[in-house]
Image (cartoon, rainbow, N blue to C red; front, side, top):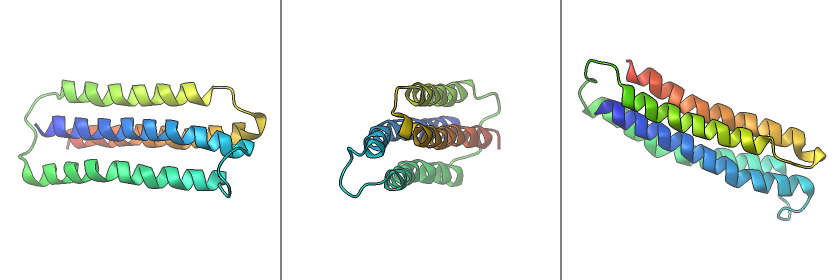
Length: 137
């Protein structure tokens, strides 16, 4: 049971960050082109992305910690289905980020979009990686 809780929580984190990235990418491109909200900068968009990422990660991390405290140790055996769930969510997130990173963006925003995409990629990959480590503790 603990393996499934960890897998679902890490999948929620990975998918949440992916969709958060997609939502903020459009804002970043508009801001870099000068079509964004008044007073909005690329740094502001990244700050909003990081804050909303923190909110996305908060509840699943609390659930994982509480499940470690309240549930018994994981059963013996290889947790194949939880691993497939985590790897699937990670691959989906990474592919979505790579697709959107390669899209047509103005030359003045290309470097910022690439940096933003790499930050999002690291966040999407890190949560399931930590979840895999928790599965084998």
